[in-house]
Image (cartoon, rainbow, N blue to C red; front, side, top):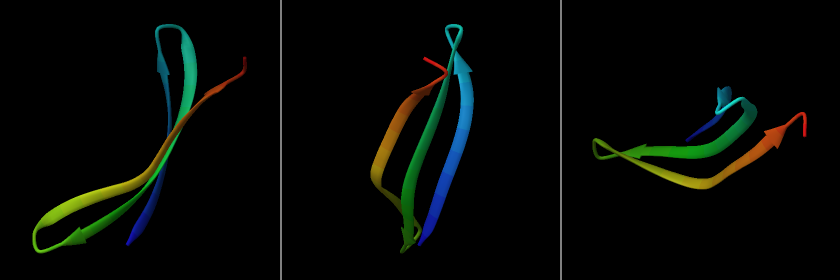
Length: 40
């Protein structure tokens, strides 16, 4: 199980996105995916 966090720009706005990923049997499953806008 891994927790990921990434920040990026899209259409002139900055976002942060995080999710929990479980890798099992050669497949990836994502849970609790959340995206927020930074610097509103």
